[in-house]
Amino acid sequence: MLKLPKNKKLILFDGVCNLCNSSVKFIIKHDKKNLFVFTALQSDAGKEIIETYNIDTKKTDSILLYTAKKGIDYKSTAALKIASNLRFPINLMSVFFIVPPFIRHWVYNYIAKNRYKWYGKKDSCMIPTPELKNRFLN
Image 1 (cartoon, helix red, strand yellow):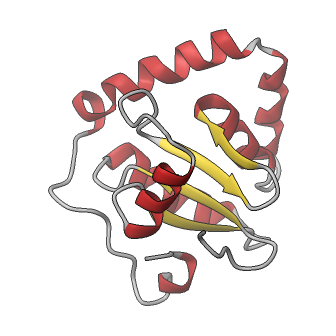
Image 2: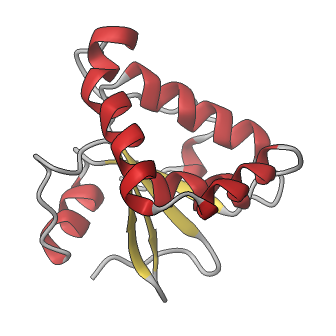
Image 3: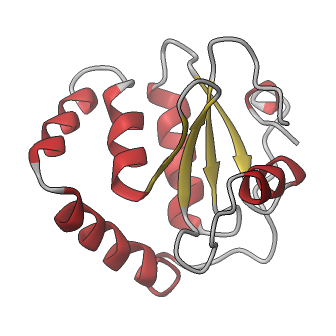
């Protein structure tokens, strides 16, 4: 099983999605506690988690949050848990946990389904800069 650095949370993202890559850059900028590490769903680490947790990538293919203690969070729950760990005022987005999951997930799914059309797609996964390489798992 994947060994996550101590006290870190792993964000798995669609490495060819422009929206997902922009979101990763946004999280890195606002993650002042250095809590998150990242890997593309298409990476070896991403494939290992997908296989271990038997994740259907046809239903969940844009963002996952993995913690060693709690396992996997999906879709809007993952996004809101990530936001809740960022600095103020971004962490205020956690107020949306009051919205029932079926509504949050519907909105999330709508955006995820259209992300390539609206934001575009890369031919290959994002390659982190040397300064950010320690924030990414292979």
